[in-house]
Image (cartoon, rainbow, N blue to C red; front, side, top):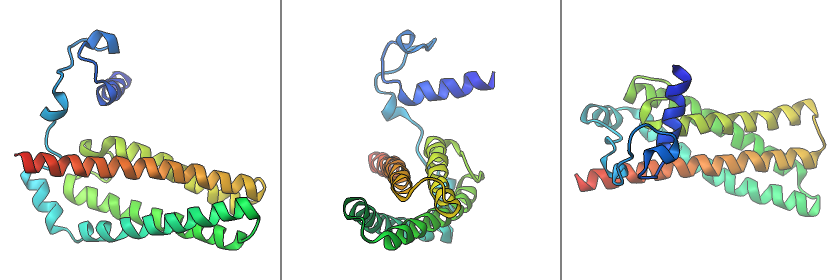
Length: 187
């Protein structure tokens, strides 16, 4: 039963077909379903979001993490291309990972204050699911670095895989927040 619910949520999240049976669903998918989604925040949730200091913390940490990510990508690519700057590349990845842990912990606190759940609140369910992959890849990099798994090139490519997942996850959040803003403006 639970696996059917999870599968249904997955299909609903990616299904844009107006013919439900074509995607394995028992009911028709409304062509304008994206515009009939519930708002990201109820009035109470929006008030809690605006009142909590964790909203500001997230608003500061997200661009700082992105800036560190951009510098780190450059350092990793420089190392992979020239073999120079290994310590700087490794340090930047560790810093990016520590910022990721920080933003995840404070994000869980924010999500709990706004939605009453530390993780997987319906409004951010898929973003949180993908965040787990991002965390796993970044943590795998730390494990590889500190335990000496693989050579430095393997470790750098693992970091780039973690970064690719981070870009996808950041895009999820940006698109979700943009949709919420547009939905609020249209209301």
